[in-house]
Length: 313
Image (cartoon, rainbow, N blue to C red; front, side):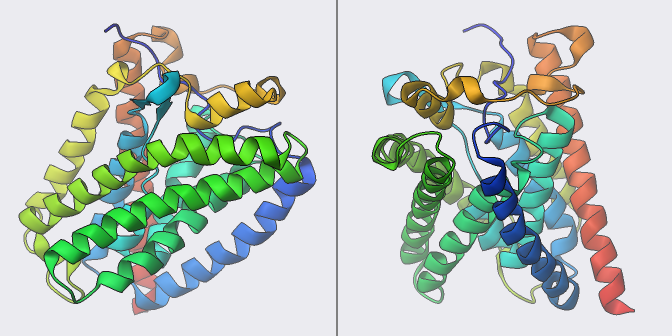
């Protein structure tokens, strides 16, 4: 398998949604983010500050790894279920918003006007869905918690696909009778990958540092911080080998006939997760991914640290 750059159409680009629908998404997303900031400032646990940066870095890196599914399509990890389960809903949402913002602003993945919609369908909707389902298994056996986490992750993707379908239909991009079964069908398979990755990550955390999943427990020594960033960087090394098949949303857009409505970003920094001077090479993708991992980790760590400092003052 040869090297290739990651496809840009992982998230909703500008042009897919009517401008009024995109603005409406911002009107929903911004107040929820404001509530998340307020609640994080009031409730943030000190041990979650470095974990938030690591979690955001891991999710960023994992999203670069498109995996093949049936019918010549591919999917990628969303990560909202994992973020909300490990970090809690408010800090988890802020971590997801940071990942999506960096992807849009630095890598031109997802539209600027559509960023509110992307935070809605990749952060708010799947995150709160997963968190609500996962809480049903709290206090039960490890096997039940694992099954609940898998169900939460699977349902989170399906809810995200459902809401995305509604937004596309409201925008006139495609009839709901066409886009809804197409989105739910392909994402039912993608959601299996989401469930497997989420369960694997939670199992790894429970084995390596179980205190991170226990409220009020000490996080222990800081060696796990370096280890966590190292895992994210290792994932980036595999990014050039990610599936080159169209992502679920891109495949549906092509099938339903609205793919050409996607608009390019008004500027270009690290498009398609590459370093422009290096072109679409494997090294280019890896270096761009490393930049993304470090930027996302640093941004979320700094934001969490600032919120924690203000809460203490």
